Length: 466
Ligand code: AMP
Ligand code: ZN
Image 1 (spheres, rainbow, N blue to C red):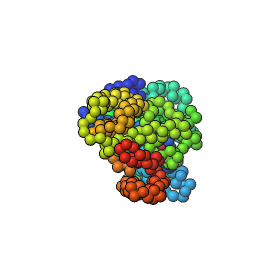
Image 2 (image 1 turned 90 degrees about the vertical axis):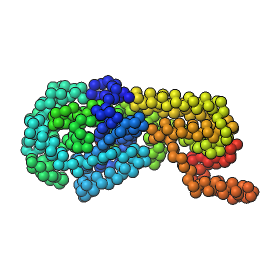
Image 3 (image 1 turned 120 degrees about the vertical axis):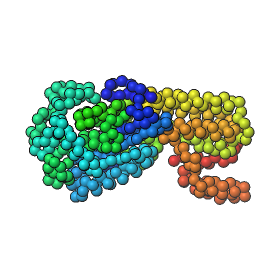
Image 4 (image 1 turned 45 degrees about the vertical axis):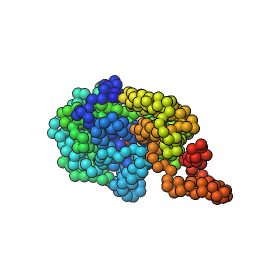
């Protein structure tokens, strides 16, 4: 597989540190609010990368942090007259509700900054001892000039950066480009004891400390939104490489922005929709489909139309899956017909094209297109009334396999629940007994529950419409 590495600005072959294993760290949310559709992009797309690597047989260890100590969390806590911990707990719970809806798998570890203070102090101490950091007025700063490679990720030069840097008179820095590793306690803020007095960690250091603790000094993949490239990831590299004396991450992957009216969706601009609200309007599945159907490095515009398109496309996939499930039970007995056999023997080429797209820097847009080609072919053969059970079963397996890698479409075998199946049978019985009023009543009840019935040569077929 090739991935675009921000560090080298090239698509490179992904070669793991240890054969067959991938260590991956992704920057997670700051937990002071519901997360928005923009935040959902890295969460979904790097979940997709992880799932695809697993599909290709890699053992992936995936870590995604929660930033629970931060100005915004503290402000929210003070506004609500509660603790930062209470705010973090609340929004971590909400994160998992939305993540589950979006079919984002839980990370192997979801560490929190507040639970890793010892590790954070430890790495800051190392940096101070090695001369890469200094204490000033109870704060500790990273001495940016001491790291010769500073700027290598965002391809910027320290002198140019410095020329544009803003000097804040309240800070005790030696140099405007230095950044805080540890911040002295301020009234009304949570604090921990440290060799430099009471205080709390800066933001960048938590990722260096937690990546090292849970994945080791050098990892394979580090990812996040493109806005994190500078300064956050640049600073993570400086901290980790100076503390450990080793490369930090081999591959740096950044997703492009999710925009609204061609402007970055962000909490600070106020132009955001939470995943919770968008899911209310369009469903979680449509949001995931919308993200997955675009390449992660292409800017993506959020609009009512694009979400409605995603819903419609997803409905086509779900209709195909539901039809195949139905035909796997009700199709003709016996061996595949010649046209089915040819189609079945060609399924492998869809899998190959799917993987070829995904191997090319996770081109999920093309991978989705491959699924639609496969569905088109399968639908054509399934439209014939003598379609066989065995063909439908094989086609179902193939479509399910590819959809499962992307986690799109209703791939569970039992999407029409048992109580619904019983209602369908009751309706059939009522019809047999010519009790049409009862049959119609049941049909309406099913409709109210989002199930419509269709009479086909193979019998009654149920579709879920919402
Ligand atoms: P935050 O909670 O702000 O630290 O962001 C969590 C993740 O969402 C980071 O990886 C950000 O880079 C990413 N992110 C924030 N806004 C957007 C956006 N509009 N489009 C894509 N990614 C974003
Ligand atoms: Zn980070």
